[in-house]
Amino acid sequence: MSEIAERLDARQLDCPLPLLKAKQALNRMGSGEVLEVLATDAGSQRDFAVFARQSGNTLLEQSERDGEFRYVLQKN
Picture 1 (cartoon, rainbow, N blue to C red):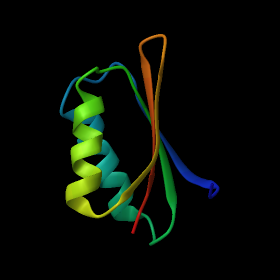
Picture 2: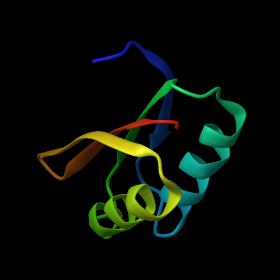
Picture 3: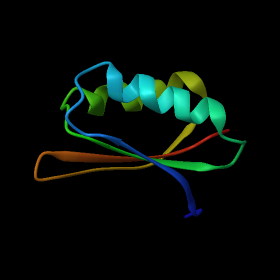
Picture 4: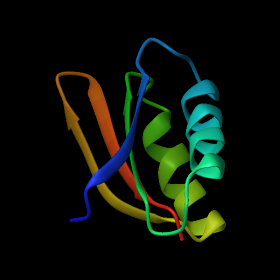
């Protein structure tokens, strides 16, 4: 996997803020760069999967541990 270029802590934020902040971070990044997002909103699971499909960015990893969700996205 590519090296993570930016990390975003979106824990304790409710939908749609984790996704909105991830979109803003990706907009600042260059093509091919990787963003890691941490979130605690359960709805973010669906949001990030749909966003990746619709935006053309790649969801490299999605995991959950003890109510904390981790997403790794690569900007295309």
